[in-house]
Image: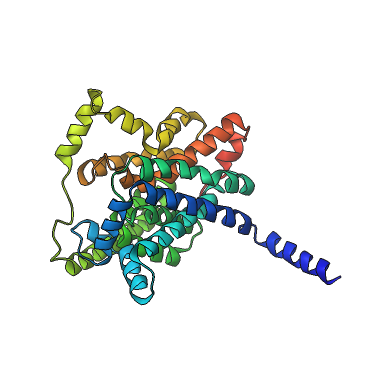
Length: 332
C-alpha cells in the first residue's frame, strides 16, 4: 500500500540520519535557553549588541567582531531587529554546542549515551550566562561551538576545515588560542616534534595576523586591545581566602559546580580528559591578568571540558561503564 511504503521510506530516512531526533529536541532546549538568557539581563544584552553591531563599542569588546558583523549584515538587509537577529544566532549557537558536544562525547561513551548526556552542558551554561554574570556579549556562546568544532575537526584529521574554523574563531574571540595547548596536551609526542612546531607556528601566525587586522580596523575605537585586571582580580583572590564578599560562593557555583566535581571524580575521569582538565590551569592564569574573574562569561572554552569529565566519570562510577573501554577510546 502507498501509505505503508511512504512510512517505510520515512523510517529508513530517520534511521540513516539518527541526529534528526536529538537535533529537534536540542532545538527546543536552545530556544528555552535563549529566552532565559534574554529574560535575566535584557537591558545589558540589547544595549551591548546594539553598540557592537554598529561598531561603536570600545576595545577589546569591539575586536570580537564576527557575530556583531553578522548581526549588522542581516539586520541591514532584512526587516529583523538587531536584538531578534542576535537571539536567533544565540539559538543556533546553543543548538550547535549541543550537537558538537554530543559528537565530542562519542569518543568516550556510546552514541546513544552521548545524545542523552549532551544536554547536561546546559547546566554550566545556565549558571555562567544566566545566573552569575552581569553582562552578555554575542561572542561568548559561539566561542564554545568554535572550540568544540576545532577539537572535533582536528581529531577527524581535517586540517583545512580545522584552520578555517580556527580562523573564524579568531575573529570571534581571542580565547580560541587556548585550543593550541589543548591539542598539545592531547596529541604531543617527541617523535613528531617538527610537526608540532610547524602547526604551533601556523596557529600563532593566524592569530597574530587576525589581531593586526582588527587593531587596524578599529584603531580609532576607544579603549585598549587588552585590559589589565590584575589589581581587581588580586582583590577577588584576597576576598576568596578571607571568605569575604561571596567570593567563595561564586567560585563554588561557577560552572554549576562541575569543575569541582571533575576534581572530586578525578580517579574515574578518562586519561585524555584528565589532560584537558589539567591544562585549564593555563586558561585560569591567563584570565587572572586579561579578564575579570568575576565575569563568569569568560570561561566559555572550559565548559565542555569540565562537563565531559563529570559525565564520563559519573558513568563509570554509577552506571557501570567499563573503565578499560574508556581508556581504549583514545583521541587520534
